[in-house]
Length: 166
Image (cartoon, rainbow, N blue to C red; front, side):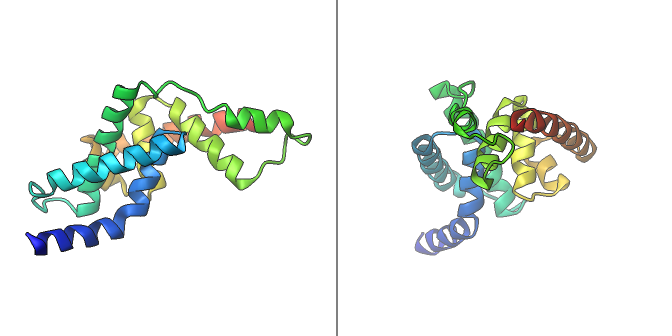
């Protein structure tokens, strides 16, 4: 078991930043993100003995992360809460057209959370640089359906972001 634990620990170290960023796409609150991340790690550890290696560890881990996030959001009923922080920053900013990169990232996370659930999942995986094939494996969609959804979601986000930055 010690060898399995060491392998698992190394795999988590390799993927921890990407797993955490996926958690960030689902929740705006820092403490909630940390809770979700911890719950995800626990679920990954619990499920590791069933990992068969049919997909890469990262694909399997992202699927567990997405499923954990969905369950977490459902339990906490946080999915529909909006991040008002960006709106306050914009109101306080005299030059509303210039925003910092952190504010732009916060806005992006806010707008992603407004997408339909499946589009939100897909875009979060795109931002983590997963291929269409990997996203299809994680979501259970066909690759062509994933590509279509990515295109449509990007167009929606572009319009939403343009509206939010004006």
